[in-house]
Image (cartoon, rainbow, N blue to C red; front, side, top):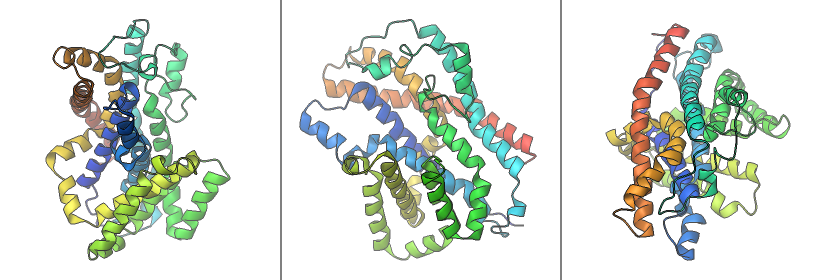
Length: 370
């Protein structure tokens, strides 16, 4: 059996840019937008210009990418959709090692940080912080048992305190462990896959993100066909991108007519269309494969796990230092935002090498892969 190389670096970059979007969203929630005028706020908040801090869109992209990347190896083998070749135990051990182990270590470190700082007053900065960030830990006292509950990623408590963004990781882990079910349905046909997705969300109460995951799976199944087509027709690619961007940023224009589930579905469709555009554009792939962007993609998981702790405890010190040389709101905001991202990326690089890579290697050893 011949297996093509399935690691695609420009997909890492897309995930990295989505992670940066989440960091930016949390910085905006913590410290507001960079402008003081109402017109500026409306433009950056209620138009597609908010794409750089649109956390809803970024999370949708995470799940579509996950479905695509995890399925691609299966569809690139000569055996195609032969599920007899699927190593379920090895796959599951790799996913648990890849997602759960780094999360567990960083959760333990967060618990230590929580116990050391929860009773200390927040630092006052020149850029006023919202209660959302200053009281995130202080207003939610945790016991040892509640901390242990947050360690069980397969079933998190309703309120997650130590790493609040980890609710997406819980869904990601569960969906990825059910990948074989999606592949079996895809083997029967697209109609089976679509029927299951609608049934799961509307009747069984499964997370709406199963649809995002299945969008990624379908893109993986038919990627050769759609890629060869889109590479020949430039205007179709760009039309898909424009429509995809509209759907991807739908939260600003459709929030008054759609409920939360509808917004997630539309942004997921937009994420799938953007990914479709990238798959059909060699120029975009080359741009996203630049070394600096690939670096962000590599460390994106650690960035996602660590950035909230940076926002809570390092950003206030950075803003205090900035206030010594910068007095205006815009300069202080931009400096704080950039420094938060830079420090988060630096810590994420260390975490990637010292934590993520050993966990991935352990997963391969446990599953018998070489």
